[in-house]
Structure formats: C-alpha cells, structure tokens
Image (cartoon, rainbow, N blue to C red):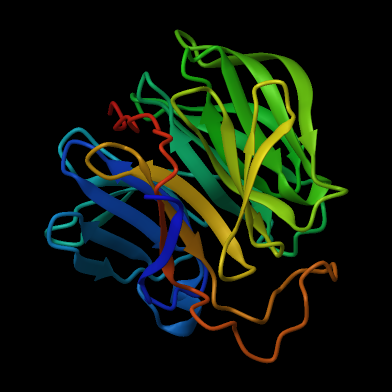
Length: 304
C-alpha cells in the first residue's frame, strides 16, 4: 500500500496544535490553541482502537500538553504551567510566568526522554522577539533555556538525545543545539535550516526513528522531512494549507497524525498569512498519513 492521506476527524479546530501519541494508553491527544476564543474545546483525545473522541473546555489559550505518569496532564497555558485531571477537570497552577506583557504566551512544547517538559513562548502578534524557551523540570522548578524568540515551535530531539531542535517560526529558521540529556543544558547553537525560499513557515515538528526531522509548513501545506545534514529528503503536500503540527503514532508508530487550523482571521502584525474569507474545505481537521513505511519514536511521559 502506498501513501494515503485522509481527513480522519473533521473537528474544525480553530487552531489545532501539539499532537502527542501516548503509547502506554494507545491514545492520541492534541490541543486547540485558541479554541477558547470562539467557544470550542481546548483539549482533544482520541482512543485509537475505538476512535472515541473526548474533549475538554478551558478558559485560557493552550500552547501544549504532556501526559503525566498517572495518565493525567501538564498543560502549558497562556500564563504558565498547570496540572489537569481528566476525570474531574480540576486545573491547578504549578508556576505562573511572571511576564506582565499580555502579548506573550506559552506555545509549543514537548517532553524529553528524562521527563522534562520543554515549552517556548510566542508573541501573540508574531512580531517581536520578546519570548523565551523554558524547561519545566519534574520537581516543578523552571529553567530558562533560550531568549529573544518571536514564536517558538517544534521542539524535538534526535534518537540518541544528543541534538535538540526547535524553530523560531517568524525568524524563518530551525536551530539545532548539542543537548545534555542528563542536565537538560543546551550548547553549540547552530542554524539547521531556513524557510525563506520555501512555501510556508516552520510550525510543529518531530524526529523519526531514523533521525530525520519532520515539520509542518503552515501557510504552505507541506510536510517536509529533513535529513540530519539539513537537506530536504521528502515533501508531502497536504489537503489544506494551514497544517500546524504532526506526530507519529498508531500501534506500530508508522502513522502520522497532522493537525490543522480553520481560523481565517489572524492577530499577527505581519502579512504572511494569505487573506481568506472562509476556511478551506476540511481545514481544522485531524489528518492521518499512512503507507510511508517510516516509523517514529515513542513520546515519553512527564516525570513529575
């Protein structure tokens, strides 16, 4: 069977983002980053075997989430880190970020293989490099890893944990760092790739079992697979332009789940987003790509 792309669930996410496959429960989670602004759920869950869908509403924007050892979640909301209990919907603050600039909110994040939750900030107007990259440690302390970011996206690691990648979307580059998995420290910053000559901008990302980096090109609508040397290995055109993120999942970790956004009005100060009067057909859906014969890596749970 060759490449197949399907609209798996037409959930009409306002800003679908941050899919994570929880191998232990065989469940896919993702978020609607600004769903709260239009009365839509913020957290989504799909049980793989039954394709049963559950969702939860929040009052704040959500950037990312990670699953805890007990099956509940840590959320990166607009103003800080919170714990969330799926059964009773209790939301408890862990640490609030003390930045009083209302344009700054937490955005994309992912957990490393020692159980740290790495989350970057974004300027809601997508204009100024006023944000940071943060690490929520398992003891709930917070470490600042990087600064001068406009919009952080796509944090992910090489299979051997030695390289950390993340994109500053509106500076139009992916960065790579040497990563100390024992301490979580970054060093040896390099520019891995640039999107200036591509159709679209870097958004969410992941690394497959062969060490190739995958990213979703928002605005452009392509999934791009980069070789470890920064060269483009593969492009897959998706049915909608505003794809936002991806992860590998399924029982064999050989399916790619892709989120997208339906919103047509953007708060950005720039004009990079195409002017739309209405969303594309199936924009905001959860998509699935199969038949590539490429596997991903298990996503770890948060250790705290």
